Each structure stands twice: as C-alpha cells, then as structure tokens.
Image (spheres, rainbow, N blue to C red):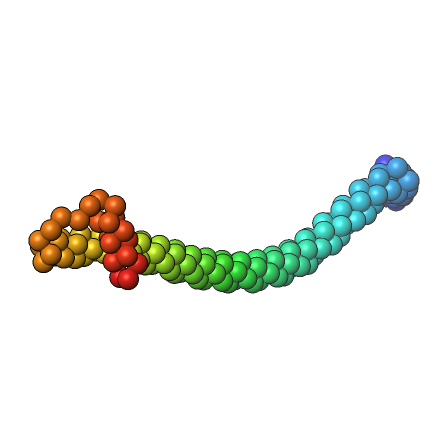
Length: 156
C-alpha cells in the first residue's frame, strides 16, 4: 500500500465529507444559529422595551399618585369648608331658635302681665266699691254696683 494513495484517498473523502457537510449539514446549523441570534436579539430588544415601559409606567404611576394626592387634598378642603358651613348654619339656626323662644317667652310674659293687670283692676275696683260702701254705710243696689265697677275699671 502506498502512503500517497492513502493520503490522496483520505483527502478525497475529507473533501467529500466537507462538501456534504457544507451542502446538507451546515445550512440547517447556520439557519438554527441565525434563528437563535434573532431570538436573542428580539429578547434583548423586548427586555429593553420592557425596561422603558417599566420606567414610563413608574412615571405615570407617580403622576397619578400626585394627581390623587392633589384631589384628596381638594376633597379634604371641600369637606372642611362644608363642615364650617354646617357649623355656621347650625349656629344661625340655634340663634334663630333662641330668638324665637325669647320672643315667645316675652309674649307670654306680656300676656301674664296683662292678665295680672286685669285681675288687679278687678280687685282694685272691688276694693274701691267695698271701701265706698263702707264709707257710705249704705247698700248700693246691684245695677248701680255693676255700673260703678265698670266706671272704675274704665278709669284704671
């Protein structure tokens, strides 16, 4: 056996092996590598988009929180204003009720005073007639007595 022929045969088989590998094995491997590279690139791009989206979401969340706090402050201010109004309304209502009760009490007092004066007039008239009767020591008839009482009442 000749070493040159063996070497030459091995070179042909190696070239044939390389050609078969390049024709049938290498393209699917290259396609798989390109697909894997594309998948990795897409994953990295998606991760970068995710980071940007997360940052934007954080900014929007901060803005919404700021808006919510401002709205809450506004609502609290409105509630405090409404409470002040309600307190003022209650004070006014209590003041009005007190004034009304005071006026009613004054009217009742005035009625009582009028009744007392009327009763006092009747008593004074009766005393005056009684005193006049005692002074005169004579009896006055009922009609004259009633006329006298009315006259005295009118004067008082």
